[in-house]
Length: 104
Figure 1 (tube, rainbow, N blue to C red):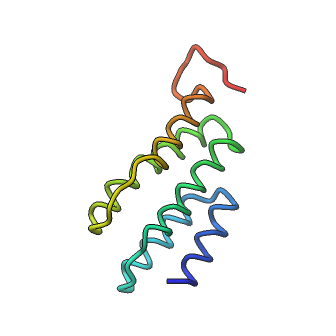
Figure 2: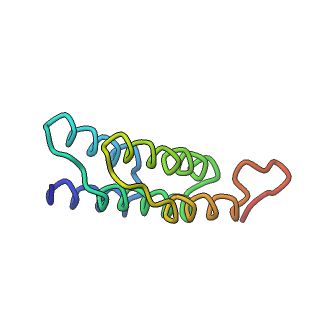
């Protein structure tokens, strides 16, 4: 649990979403059940990637953020949408997916 959370934080800080997703997968494969804070850290990584990454990165971050509620629900966790909505708003504000907007 706590080691995985620390590793997730490192991945989120580095904007390495694929590695963060692998950490969650390894947790599940080894019988450790992620807690809501694990998913919160993943969403934090999504937000960082949207702010600091290229346009393609922002789209990937949005895709990952949108997968979080289903993953949490599948584990029987209560899903609170404000964090995911924040990731979506951040992506829209950047112009992600809008061909008419060049973004920053």
